[in-house]
Image (cartoon, rainbow, N blue to C red; front, side):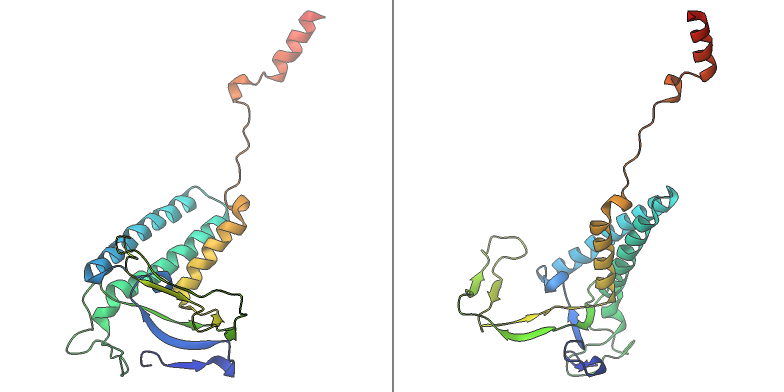
Amino acid sequence: FELGDEFKVLGLDWFKIHFIENNGMAWGTEFGGKNGKLFLTVFRLVAITGIGYWLYSAVKKNSPKILIISIALIFAGALGNIFDSVFYGVLFSDSHNQIATFLPEEGGYSSLFHGKVVDMFFFPIIENAQLPSWVPEINFNWPDWLPFLGGKNVSLFVDRSFTFFQYVFNVADASITTGVCILLFFNKKAFPKKEFSEPAENIVPPVVVQHYEKQRS
């Protein structure tokens, strides 16, 4: 695949494999330059370390299976995206107007920790639908002083059409989303409330109760 190539799965218009490379986070959100990319990768490494410890702790405490499964899905997805961020730029050549080469002699398209995440699943269930006249156009730039988003343009409905679902994602993203949804929808099962029982020292043995009642009678 060259960057931007796509094909329909089983001939379906609403399910396509579309090859893109994501330099940032969800929905293509980026931090500025190489330093921003490095910060993002390091942040992901710290986050996945925390998630891994959470998974280990949940298994060790014999937590509900639904909690362990959801954490495992989040951990696996995060690990997949981390692999791309750390190693993909070293292992593959550039994909612009050519098919990427694995372990090229001249080296990869980027350095360690500066790789792009590969996305491929595209579900344009509703594509280029025309909007009614009462839907307003949204077109503005974020203030320059705003961290990470400063100066970026936001354009929605300018061409009077929209596509749902327009974002391209990968297996790792789907795994993370599934894990988070499980936690949201099955929150009570994943985090059951503990039933508080009276401390053992405050419970009077039946023999003592019977002896006390005999003395009173």
